Length: 307
Length: 177
Image 1 (cartoon, chains in turn red, brown):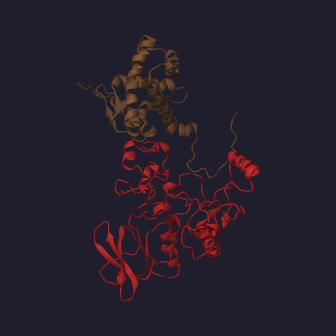
Image 2 (image 1 turned 135 degrees about the vertical axis):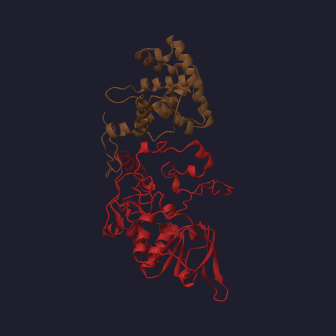
Image 3 (image 1 turned 90 degrees about the horizontal axis):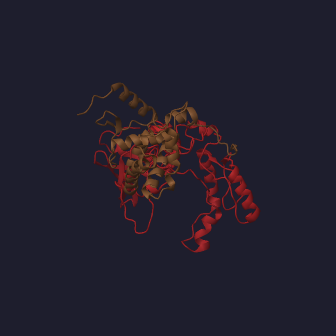
């Protein structure tokens, strides 16, 4: 990580600035740095380096104080985070605490947040389906919003592009509602699921389909994944601790290290973006004002492209 | 006046705790007996000793360690103290005291003084009693003791052969009949 020293504008100017290091931020960083752009990625939370900062990843159940269970006190302090299936004793350090980050809910809304490098890409459920033509046509067809200017056909090649790098396991199911993609071998269903699939097909085959969910796991890594330093998923079912094998996709295991290798990435944790700097004359956003959450100082970063 | 602590047995207790569970905040009773610090529960030493016998009756030692050796009674107390809501904790406390009274009446002697087969037989009758807190306590105790046993270092390493990275998924694993 490049050290931003000195108070010169040059040191604080980049070709591109990316706000957030989650799944989207990591991808932006990868694409931009690959193209030679000096890119600054700003993350409000702390750094989480792949493997090094996964403190619980190799703990056995009896090494956890409550064998993985959340205490009553924690449930009272973080009632919303506790609604997330993945919020357990071994993973709670990757979730934003409701105590520290309360919000008003007029109607119930479980805003689950991960305020660290990698964001929710560390703790997500890894279920990855393509939107279909029906989703893109949805607003126009069902009249709930302004018609989108793009369709599935426009995005399809980009789905291919992302899926190849990320590694998505799935079968060619031939359903237009859940389009097929660039898949690694799909995970087989178990005995009960197979029976369920057959029975549903028998009775509702024309309208209902049971498939093995497409997921961001390396069922069989390809060269591109090995090149990222990731290997085959080991079926641990401990993903949300952070995976030492890189078996599932996260910014931490995949896009950020890849971007770092180009030499064009500056990753700055503890950087909350305060506001966008907008130049009235140029009619352009020219940068961001950051509050360093460690030191409290305000820093303006400038850029030529804005994301 | 506190008696001197037998350091050998205290050390052994700490090692078992370290091997079986993360190091519990240990403390010692006036008698010198090793125990854990509780925040919400208030348990008499005699009831704790009875609880220790209970988990041993539930999971007796054979050629593998039983509830007593694995300190399951401390695990039960810790989980109830940290992870249960106040209502459940009260049920546990009341039920534990009730168990002492009820078992004394049923056996005509304190639970700890009875023969193993009498103790075992008594446990099968708990759920027949009318006492709600007794039954609630017993269910909690049983559930937590089993949880403590199955997830203990000894059982996971030697009996279950827990694999942290199986490297496989077999959706057709045969169940024994």
